[in-house]
Structure formats: structure tokens, C-alpha cells
Image (cartoon, rainbow, N blue to C red; front, side):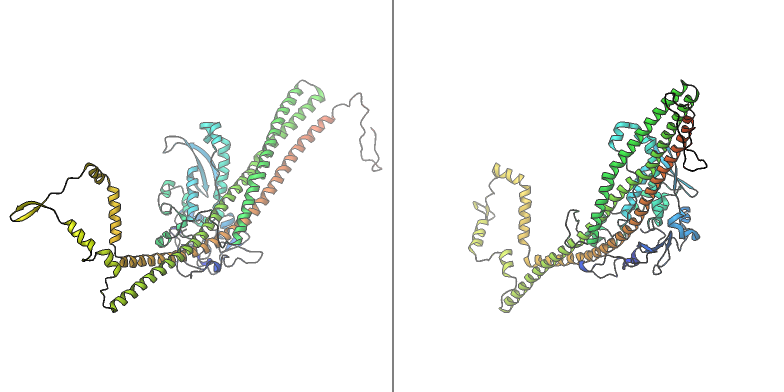
Length: 596
């Protein structure tokens, strides 16, 4: 988003064809082009968010001023900024310039009444301390700042079951801390390799050691984030210049069906659901079951190796040596299996869980775009209804003016029959005369200074007094109804016309902005999905290769141990009740067995 040193508030604006609010005519839903410009490239190149990639280098297209995101016209804001955007290494920024390493996790109680775990982050020569809650709030801020990008996940919190089993020691579990440290390190490195998120100034401040996260969290831009990102610009949720128009946008429901859905995003939703079901369903169950079996196998080998080593102490000669070597081979199998379990946890289980989280993130991203599309269609519907209502009001106004002109031509006063009948009754009417008579006070037979004095009003009965004292709501309601009846219908109609025109004006602005948001969200989400797909293919390939290497190393370690045990076993004398063994050895005539 907009950093304090960035001149361009929208990193995608040059690519999707509009800048800010102006510069784009309001398209209909049929004419919205969702494909970003320049996505068709040669096989040796690919585009991500408007930037061309070739291998591990990032090349800025010629139409974007300022070159790649690493080139900054103004001075650096911090050492992290200098490290990320130092001139000559900028071409390998995405690939290998930055490798973040969480070196340690320590227990501390600084500025707190209870102890907590902090993670040490090393970026170049800078060491930073952050808590897990800091990572969590940092990622939430990035999601709101960049609602159209796939923000990498962080490791999930401990489950209620873990807390129930381990109680107060759940947060101090060494295995959990080690796993969380590795996955937080992956999170930071994914941000560092992202073409847009790596340039975010909040990311640089998060890695800085000279600023507290609480200060960052309660200062702009994180403190200015809107509560509802659906009523904020998709390209910059912090932009409040069109707040009135965005306030006029409806709040769509996620379950609302689209009239004109984009088939590409429907296919993306289906593919993401299928991908998530594979990862969180069968694949995760099989992986968990496989890890349990390997763990049981390692435990059984540990017990068997200990038994054989103890058995070798009670024997002598070659048998004792053979038993000892066999026990050592089984111990080697146990150790290599434990190492295999650890490697599988890091290179297979954890990435698999991370991609399950990625699937949920993509679902939310597609839901955001879905709601933006619904918002656009609902705005169109509301605008049509307002225009129809305005047309009806204008027809009524024209009819009233025609009637007024006709009465004026006939010499009748143009107060309006309806107004006269509603505002004041005719003076010669019987009802008015009766009301006037009824309103005259009664004469009580007493005169004062020659003027008859009327009778005092009769006292209220108890029931009537109670009704008048407790009828506040009824009195207010009758007063409101009386006020409504006293309003001039012509003034009310003209006021309604004016309000409807203002509402239509706001809705037209909102529809214009909604069309821009929909186009921007569609193009940027599609571009980041393409980038994620390439990342996913590369990561799954590395996961498969890592699994093959892990099993190969496991087999090699076990083979060496069992070869040594075989040598000791062959030194044991043959069984006395069995004939001598025949072995094939090389002789002058190849293939002929030689009997010893």
C-alpha cells in the first residue's frame, strides 16, 4: 500500500489501465475486462502483478516509471530498507537477496507480569525480537492492506485439546516451539520473495529492532484501516477521498448468487475446493498415519536393539560379537528412522499443512472478489430502482404543475385544492360552524366589569387523567401524524425528488467505483493466483524430491550398518547338523561353482 516513501499509491495502476478514481469510464458488467494487460508472454518469461520474471531475476516493464520496486528515488528510511533495496543486488531481490533466519526462541517476561516466548529474527546484521501475537497482528494488517493478494499463512495456534492435555505447559512445549519457529521463518521468507509485499514499509519496520510492534500497530497506516474492506477501494483501502460514495455501496452476503458470474473464477473456486479437500482430507490422514507407523517402528527398534545388546553380554566368542553388531545395526535403524521422522516433519508434513492454509486463504480471496461482484450488481439494481422512483415522482410533479396551470388559466387561486382541503376547512361549512360553536366557552351567569365570565373547565376524571399522563407514546405518535398531515404535499414531493436525485448521484459514483474495484480485484487476484500456481508446482516438486532423498539416505545408513553386522555373522561357525554351505566364487572358468 502507500508507504511514506512511495510516490505511486497503487503498484498495479499502470497495468490494469486506470489511475485512482478518475480515468475509467463506467463499464457494464458485460464489457469489464478481467484479464490484466501483458499476461501473454513467451514461455521463457512470466508475469506477476505487472512485472516480468526471467529465472530468478525481476525485470520491470518499460511502461512503469521508476523501474523495479527496488529502485527508490529518495533516501532509505532504515537499515532494513537499505538492505532490501541496495542498488547492485536488486536484480536478485526476489530470489536470494534476503534470507530471514529465526535463530532462537527464548522465554522472557519483559514488560509483562507473566512469561512468554519471543522469537529472534536475524535479517542481515539486524536481530529483532517478536512474539507470536506480533506475527498474528502483522499478518492481519497485511491482509487488510492488500485484500487482493495471497498473504502467506503463519502457523496455527494450539488447539484446545493441546491445552487440555498439557495445560499450562502447552506454550512451552519444545516440539511446538521448534515447529512454530520453522514455519514463522518460512512465512517471513515468502514475504521477502513476494514482488509486492517485500516492498511494504510495514514489513521493513517489523524486521527493525529499533521500534516496538505496539507502536507500529497503533500508528498509521495500520491504525487507519477501515472496519469493512468491502466499503473501501480495492487498490488502496486507506484512501478516504471517496468515502461518501463507498458508504452508499450495499453490504453483500456471501451466499448471494451472481447473475453474470465470471467462469474463470468459478473454475478457480472449484479447483481450490478440490485442492483443499485433497490436502486436508485423504492426504493429511495418510500422512498422519504414515508418520505414526514410522514412529512405532522406531520405538520398536529402540527396544529390540537394547535387548540384543544386553543379550550379547551373556554370550562369548563370535556369537557375542554378532549379537552386538546386530543390536548396533538395529540401533542405527532406530536413529536413522528418528532422523527420517524429523526430516519428513520439516519437508513434508509442515509444507502440506501450510498449503492447506493456503487453500483457505485463496477461498477467502475468491470470496472477496465474489462479494465485490455482488456489490457491483446490487448497486446497479438499486440505481435502477432509484431511477424508476425518480421518474414516477417527476411524472407526479409534471401532472401537478399542469393542473396548477389549468386552474390559473381558469382564474382560480392556485393554492391547490388538495392543499386547501388539508390545510384549512371552508369557512361556510357546517362542520366548521359547529366546531366554532363548540369551542365557545359556556356562560356561568357572572359578569365582571360588564363582561360575562365563562365557566371554569370541568375537572378531568381519574381514568382520563391516567390516560393523559401515561399516553406519552400515543401523544408523540399523534403529533407526528398531525405533522405529516400538515405538510404541504407539493413541498414533500419536491423534497423527495431532490433527495432521490442526490441518492442517484451518490449511487452513480458508487457504481463507477465499484466497477473499478471489480476490474482491479479480478486482474490482480488472477495475477497472484498465477504466481501462486508456479510457486505451488515448484514447492511440490521440492517436497517430492526431498522425500526421495530422505528415504535414500535412510536406506544407505541402514545398509552400511547391516553390512557390518553381516560380516560378524559370517564369522560364526556353521551349524554342526547342517551340510557345509556352497559359495560361488570366481575361477578360470566363469560361472562354475567351487565347493569349499
